[in-house]
Amino acid sequence: MERRGLFSLFYLLAMSSVAGQLEDVITQAKVVRALPGTDVTLVCSFPRSDHIYVTQVQWSRIDDNQLTRIAVYHPTYGIQYFKFPETAYNFSVSFSIGNCCSSDAKEASCSPGPNTFPECSQWALQLKNVSVSLSGQYECSLATYPFGTKAGKIQLIVQAEEEQHYVKEVQLNQTLEIPCLGNVTSENLSNYPLKWLVGENGRKEELVTKEPSSPEVYRNDNALYRERIHLGLNNALKIFPTKLSDDGRMFSCHVAYHPERTRKSSTTVRVLAYPEISASLQEGSAGTLQKPNISCVVRKAFPKPSLVWYVDREILRDQSGEMSVKQEDSQDSEGFYQLRSTLMLHGIHQAHKIFLCACLFSFLRNETWNVSSEEIFFSFDNKSNEVSIQAFSTVASEENRSVSLAPLDFTSRASLAPATATQGSGKNVKARPFPWPTAVAVLLLLCSFLIVLGIWKWCQYQKEIVDKVNE
Image (cartoon, rainbow, N blue to C red; front, side, top):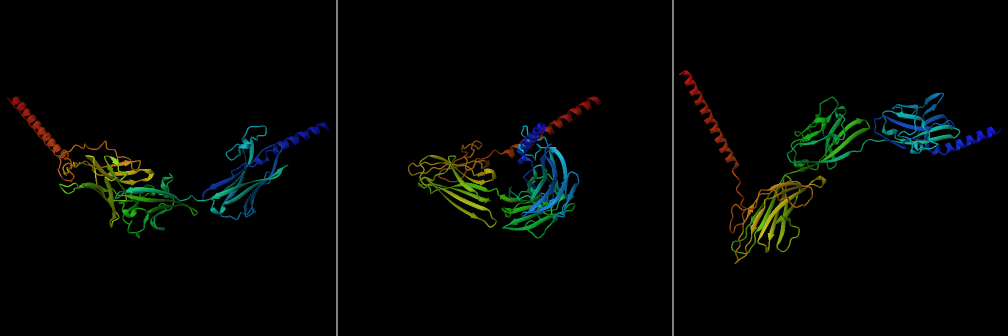
């Protein structure tokens, strides 16, 4: 009688110890995401114990609080499958014994302690070639002794990838190459049907289509791209030459992996046209105190840049009473922008100043493309109502800057020492460059003369040797 009482007490303690962990008995992922056309496995686990017995396991799907049985597993009688509404898709159920501390298990079951379960019974529901219609909530219910029915729920979400968006910049008249799917996959896309489309203002038009193991088919409806496009490596779209009309257009690549899974990527094109920029002095009236104006003209620019003036190699931020800026912008029939900015000098007290204008293009990643004009240096002498102006210029430059409106790097520019000077004139006088072509031509002529002379000397020497031998 005493032994029976001790056994009953031990059993109750064991049951209460296990019951304290019943909230962790079902260990599986709460949400499973899958792509259409792939295979999915839903796993439900239950800790193994000498005091708990699993008599039956059932997989079901819950739709609007209505339960639909998929399969029932019994340790003795095996597996019984039921008619699943999604009959077009294969499914199966399997049983295994694994470690409770797998990637799908809860951390509470894996923490060290006297009530930790080293092994779990696992029941897996395999769904093959899933479709979007299989999305929903699935339930794994277990009939246990002595704790009754326990259940766990898994939410299955079958959804195709969202469309990826990219931006690509290209210079005018260069080759534009747009990778399909943005090079996010190393998979060979030639195994799937795909097509390229071009869109603008919400309207899309097919450019080229390709089926597996078949040549691409180009659409001749679009005259703008009929002769300029072809498919490159791994079905990348190549466009040559690029035009201003390509700016702002969106090129999309669609790859059909599955009837319900079409991967899409869209690339918006930004075209950049390298501009022409020049600065010149507009001379004032001779013998007067009228100051000259400095004009800066930007031609063939795209997109529209911003124009900045530099005075003594510092950005002109505040237009004081000594100088002011007037700017006119226009766009020609081809779409290029033309900017004309005039720096008007009203009352300069400093004797010497250096002027330069630059146009700035904003790029992605906060980068700025800087194209600057030549530097203009002049001195102003306001004695006895006489104006003396000296103007010199250096070579124009282009730079890539990472910060907008940053000071230009003038350390690499040519010296400002004048080559010639003009009195009372506002013209630009360019320094005469060294005549490299003439120097190279003279050196080549001298080398040719030395080679001919050497050959003639060698022939004379050989002739003297032959004559001595004959004697």
